[in-house]
Length: 469
Ligand SMILES: Nc1ncnc2c1ncn2[C@@H]1O[C@H](COP(=O)(O)OP(=O)(O)OP(=O)(O)O)[C@@H](O)[C@H]1O
Image 1 (cartoon, helix red, strand yellow):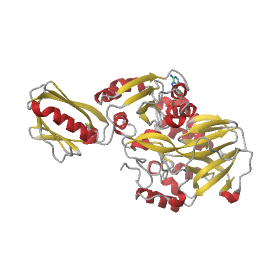
Image 2 (tube, rainbow, N blue to C red):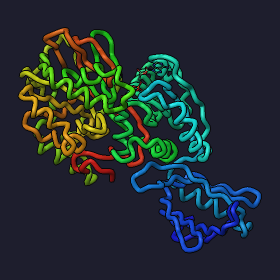
Image 3 (cartoon, rainbow, N blue to C red):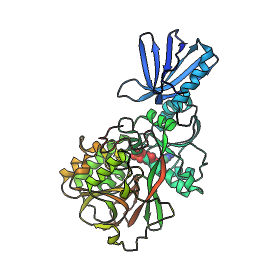
C-alpha cells in the first residue's frame, strides 16, 4: 500500500484522552485536541494491534538538540475492524525496503569508554531492540581480544553484529572475521557501533557529529540501517598481518592515543589533552615513508569527492577490487618509483593514514575519505612550528576538516604505503592499538568490510561541511 494520507485511527489512552493517529510515506501524525506531533516515519519502529489495544513505538527528541528516546503510545481502539490493517500498513511504510525483526548478535564491553555500556544497554538500547521485535544474542566481553574469539567462530546467520564499545572492539571483530573458516561471508555481516567507547569514530562517521554519540540514533541504525561496503587495510609487520579498518598513526598522533589510555575516564577529552601535551614536547617522527600514490593534488581530490556526491563514478581514480589473498610485494623487495611509488623522508610531526572523516569529535582528519574508493588517505604533518600544528585542532578547523588545506599538511590518496622507522623509540598504532615501531606496510582491501549505515555514505565530509545530509 502506497500511502499519501492513510485513514485515521482513533484510540483512547490509559488516561482517557482521545488520540488520532494517521500517517503518510514520511510522517506519523499524532493528534490530541489542538496539538499535533509529527514523527519522521524512519523513527517509527513498531505498531502492534492485539485484542482492541494498539501499541505504537517510535524514537523522538524531547529537545531539538537532545538525543532520541523511545516513546510508546498505547490505547484502546474504537474502530476495531480497521485496526489490524492500519497497523500493518504503518509497519509496511516504516520498514520500506529494510528487513524487520532483525537477528542481532550483541557484544558489550563493560569497560569501554567511561564504563557505562552495561547500563546503557539495559536502560536504553535493549528496550528499543525489543520494541522493534529484534531477536538478541548478547555476550559481555570478559577480556582483551575476546571479540576475536567470538567472531572467528560466529554463526553467519545474524543480520547485524552490534558492538557496544569503542573502535577497539570493532578492530578485534574484523580480525576475528579474517580468521573465520568462511571469512568472505563473515565480512559481509554488517557491523554497527553503539557508541559507548571513548572516540567512537565509527559512529561519528556513520551518523555524523550531531547523532554520533546518541546511543538511540545508533540503535535505530541497527534496526533500519542498510549495509555499506567499506575498504579495509592489510597491515603487515614481519610475517604478521593485521586487519585495520580505521587508521594507522605514527609520531604525535600515536602517542596521543596510547599515551592517554589511563585517561579513558575522561571520554574523548583525553585526545585533545593528549594532542596539547604532544605539542609541548614537539618531537619529530623520524621515518622513511614510501607511498604508492594515486593522487596528491588536493584540488583534484576534492573534485573527485564532488563528482562522487553528484553520483558520478571516479573513473581513473578508482582502484580495482582486492581480496585477502592478493598482496603487494614483501618489504624486502625494492619499490619501483616508476610504478607510482614516491619516497617522503622530510622531518614530520606525524603520519596519519586511514579512512572515515572523523577520528574524534574534535578532529576530522580525513575529510575527503570515501568508504569504498579503494584508497587509503594519508596525512603527513610537517615538523614546522607548534602554532601551525595547534591550529589543526582549533574549534573552527578541527571538526570541519579545514586542516586539509594547510600547506604544511600533505595529503595523499594511495593504494599502499610502507614505513621504515629510523628509531625504535615510540609506537605505531593500528586502529588505536599499539604495535612495535618496526618496518611495516599497508595495502588496501577494497570493499572487504561492511558497516550498517543510515545514509549509504559517510554522514559528513569536507564538502558537507561537517554537517549531516
Ligand atoms: N572485559 C574486559 N576487560 C578489560 N578489557 C576489555 C574487556 N573487554 C574488552 N576489553 C578491551 O577494552 C579495550 C578498549 O575497548 P574499545 O577500544 O572498544 O574502547 P575505547 O578505547 O574506550 O574506545 P575508542 O576505541 O572509541 O577510543 C579493547 O582493547 C578491548 O580488548
